[in-house]
Each structure stands twice: as C-alpha cells, then as structure tokens.
Image (cartoon, rainbow, N blue to C red; front, side, top):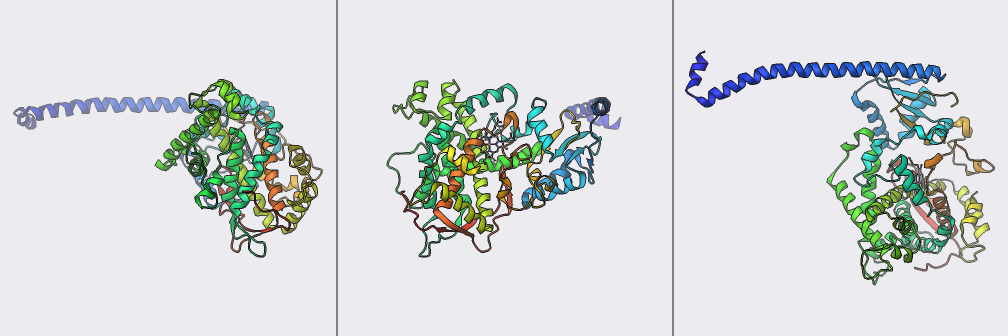
Length: 534
Ligand code: HEM
C-alpha cells in the first residue's frame, strides 16, 4: 500500500508496477500452460514411441528376424555426442575404420544395432555383411533413402543433385548423365590423357645423373591430374590445373589466349570446399558445426568459376559471346555438359550437376592413385611385376607394342539371417572392413597381394564403387583412366622408393580415406624413356 501511495505521484512508476503485476499474473498462467503443453507433447511422443517400438518388435518377430546384438552405450549423451566423439577422434587420428568401427564389429558382431540409451529405440545398424550390402543397395533399394544430412551438409557447395537426391529427381539426372560415360568417349580422350600425363611427368621434376627424381609428393600431382582428366571428360576441354601450376612456377610459358578464370585457383578453391563437405557429411546431423567464412567464400567462387567454365565450353563455337543455344552445344562436341544442355537443363542446373560429378570423381580418383603408389613403394617386387606386365602388353616408351585403348586396358587388368531395420534408422555399410574380413578374403586379408584377384569373380563382397541402381556412374571410366595413369607411370619409371621418414600409409579424411601426409617418393627413370613433349 505504501508503495502504491508513493507510486501515485509517479505515473511512469505506477505504470511500471502495474505492468509488472500483470506480467506476473500472465507469466504464472503462461508457465503453467507451457508446462502442461510440453508435458502433453512429451507424453504423446513417449506413448507414440512405445507403440512404434512394440509394432517394430512384433514385425521383427513375425518376419523371423535375427535379434541383432546391440552396441552398449557406456556414456549416453543427447544426440549421440559420445559416438560422434569416437567417430571424429578416429577421423582426426587417421584410424577411423581400423579403430572405432573395427572394435565395434569385433565386440558386437558383423551386424549390430545402435540403440538410444534413453528410449531403447533402434537408431541405426552397422553392418559389414555383403548380403546386407546387396539387400540395401540392390534387392530392397526402394526401401532406403540417402541421409538428408548429406544433402544439407553439402548444399552450400552443391545444391541438390545426383549425389544427394533420391527418387524421381535422382533418376532424372542419372539417366541424363550416364549416357556420356561410354567407351567411345573414353577412347576419344586418350590423346588428351597422354598430354596430361606428360604434364604430370614434368611436374615430377627432372632426374639426376643416376636417373632419380628429387622428392615427389605424389598427391599434389595426382590431384591436379584427376582434375584435368575428369574435366576433360566432362567439359570436352580440360581445366589445365597442372599447366597452371607449371606456368606459375615458370616451368611452362604463359598461354597466349586469356583464360575464363584463374585455373590454378580453381583447383585450390575446389579442394577447400570439398574438404569442408567431406567433414560436414561425416558429422551427420551436427554438420552445421563445421562452417566458416572461408568455406562459404570457396563455395561461392567455385560456383562462379564452374558456371563461367560451362559457359565458355558452350560458347566455344559461339565466339561472339551471346547466350549459348543448343546449336552451340552441338558444335562444341559431345560432353556431359553439352548433352545436359541439349536436354534443356539450365546453366544453374548444369553447374550443380557438374559440381556433383567433380566431387564424385576427384578425391576418389586421386586417393586411389595415391594409395596404389604408396603401397607399391612398400613392395618393390610387386612394382617390378606390375611393370613387367605393362611392358609386355604395351611396350616401353621407346618401343611401343600397342596403343592404349579401353579394351586393352581392361584385358590387362583383368550375414545371413534377416535383420529388422526400423523406419528412419541409419544403416552404415562398412565397406572398408568388409574388404578386410579374414573369413571372406583369407588369413592374409590385410596384406597387399593383388594376385588374390586372379580367377576370382567380384560380387557383393567387393563394392568399392557401391552397387545396385546407384552404383558409381564413373566406374568404367575411372578404372580405365586410372589404369592408363598407372600404366604410364610404371612404363616411364622402373623403380620407386619412399623418401626417408615418409609416412605414406597414414590415413586421413577428405571426402574419402586419403593419405594423410601425402605420398612422398623418389622415382627412377627407366632406360629408353623418351624426353617430355611439353
Ligand atoms: C576410384 C574412383 C572412384 C570410386 C572408388 C568411386 C566410388 C563411388 C561410390 C562408392 C559411389 C556411391 C556413393 C553413394 O551413393 O554413397 C559412387 C557414386 C558416384 N560416382 Fe563414383 N567413384 C569413383 C570415380 C568416379 C568418377 C571419376 C566419376 C565421374 C566423373 C564418378 C561419378 C559418380 C557419380 C555421378 C555417382 C553417383 C551415382 C548415383 O547416385 O546415381 N565416380 N562412386
């Protein structure tokens, strides 16, 4: 009362007190309401969850499903932060599959369930069972979808496209793109592939009086090689990132005609954006935690450059620089871009799909080449054997026996019970560990023994390119392209050795498993190798 009296002479204060009083009243009511609503929602959700769990268990029983072991959750945390910590620790230490996932499979069998520590609900299935790969990727393909977090994590670099979409949209782009992955297109590019190899050899640097190069970090060079060959294939003309670097280092003269953009920068910008995307996808529903201005800037400039690159491809036969038409696409020759353009896709759409193709083809190809030579450097006898086979089919640089074409490159190379999966659960197919199972591959499964392939047919036990309707579109192309690159390197260099102190087999993570510290080698020029043509 005293307060009220005092406040009468001070309208502002009165008003203030009055509103404070009303606020208290409203807040009391509001909080009660809010608590009731939260309680009602939580209770409904809880009952709903119990109901679904019951239905799921009944379904599992009626379908005679195998009661999969459940991975224990020792330190349960919301959003499975404890598991994410384990996964990410493995990513950073370079032993993701050999440590965390291997331990899980050893402890809880080839197929086990991840369940919520709070509700007991199945959240995911981890499997290294080829039969399950077949089921998810092949037989029951329509029952599964890609993780929405992959789409969200990658979106700033690449809006939805062939690598992240499902259903009709995915099959639309897949059917348009796959028409270009033909043998004819590979063979048509072989002369350019040779030129890219010559540039790569130049990048390896000169040899000393004994025929040895200095230290070569193979990953730098094969990254650019992959970028140049993949873009050659997609665009019909290459991004020339290897030449761009050689020009920067003063090892090649600058080109007379202006480029549509800084090609050297293209490779670097792509690498930054792809690095973020690879790690964001690994973070799954926590993808947003990894972000930065550098990432956003890289995504924007990559898009600008890719779009300029596509326009320049389409305008090659249209020097006036007017908006490209489908006639320009026809004149520019056949490539993924021209065929997409001819199908009526917009520049925006083509830019998106091409970015997906670059992401799909770049790190995969360069990591494969890197690993192959990292392992070969540890096994000189296998390198010699491989070189012997290449030389017996194709000859040496000095005396060629045969030209490289797809046919010859190909010739040269030549869980059992059902498991119930809850709708919405995430199924992880552990390809890395499945490829190292001793019961499938024998006691020497961990050893580098390429001879194991002799007379062996590939099935769902070997799925580096995935399988089923979403199998890698670039499989045939990349096996041929990589075989060509391997054959050309071993043809030119008869020995390789790792430099002292190099840790070439340490695993790191890009968008795929990749040599964490690069592949540091010295290479010995074979007798009779010809001088470079570039
Ligand atoms: C050694 C090289 C390569 C490996 C190991 C590889 C592996 C794979 C794998 C495992 C997938 C399935 C990804 C998933 O859906 O989760 C895939 C899909 C794909 N790959 Fe490759 N890839 C390689 C090279 C390439 C190249 C060079 C290109 C094209 C230039 C390419 C284009 C694609 C595309 C477009 C898809 C998506 C297919 C679809 O969803 O329909 N790949 N690849």
